[in-house]
Image (cartoon, rainbow, N blue to C red; front, side):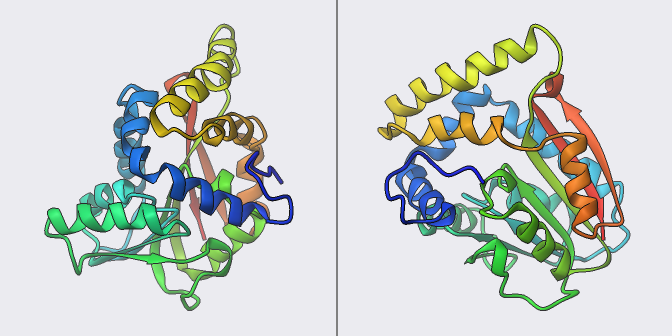
Length: 243
């Protein structure tokens, strides 16, 4: 488990991640755009296309886990679901997401709920599809979080995960390490006024079991199949899994 470099050693990872995202919520979208040079929008759209090619159920019910400010949930409307429910542990992030939804007249189509991925307030076999954008590495227990998502998916339901990974080849691996370890924390500190949030980004990415290791996690948690789709020289990866 990767604990944030936040503050209270008596708190678990969940509480520290919640506090961290509440603290940076007001600059989260801006920093996403600056730190990814806008490419995060392309990654989300590619994940939606990969997911769409595998969906069998039109007019589906979709769960967006770790929805944050709801960008992935809003992009997922391209799948034409009858409803999207986004969940997150950060109320301040959800508040920004709700404002976006209201401005886009999507109230009633996209609902945002404060909830913990490891204890989802939904019955078994409830959702046709689930998405997670840059959230699985923040789970306190990766296995429990993935198992909960699987539990709430219907038979043959599909999960799409978009997450950071480490490039394997020189010089991208070295450049990406420099970018994560030095550039992101410096810019994040200046803009968000938070001295540690983007240091946590480096630590969480470095310790995450990406690629084939994460595919094995998905299979170990009960998914029947999983595919791995590296993007942009391997700095992010899209995973598609079936219940």
